Image 1 (cartoon, rainbow, N blue to C red):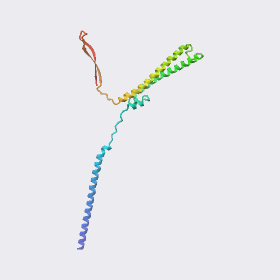
Image 2: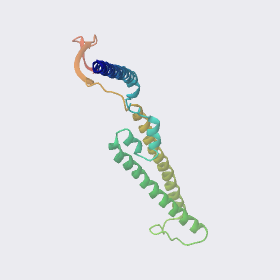
Image 3: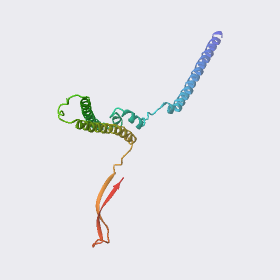
Image 4: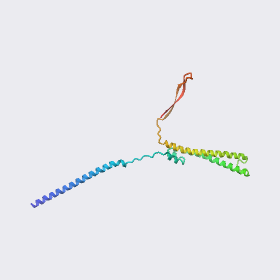
Length: 206
């Protein structure tokens, strides 16, 4: 009788232990499911805030002008590097004339001052020229020197203006259908015996 009672108590304890284990396991599963749901919702809510799209920086015409303080740099920024030979060709051309006229101007000036101070003619190729001719040659080269200084400044300024204008037009889209057509036509002309006058019609499509 005692053994039967003990076995019954052991059985009940085992059942209770299994019941507690099952209950704890069920609670743990429910907790994990609830936690996973909260994390998933948090990810869904926060995802739009995490994803960022890198927008390209807008093209800046002012930056193009500042870069063009070094001739051609602004054109490179605008994607027009093919203009660099033109810019440096123009600057080199006017620069050559500025140097040439300046050299001649100073040579004639020094020769003229040397002569009026009692010296003998020394400038090679101009020793037979009178003082008045030497002075006129100095004045002529001086005017040309100043003219080409102005032209060189204008070329440099055009380099800046070009960079600024095409910096603004950088994002300008040209329609592929843009076209310009010319076609002959006739318009009424009562002074003509035929009553018509031939004309040229221009059609611009955009």
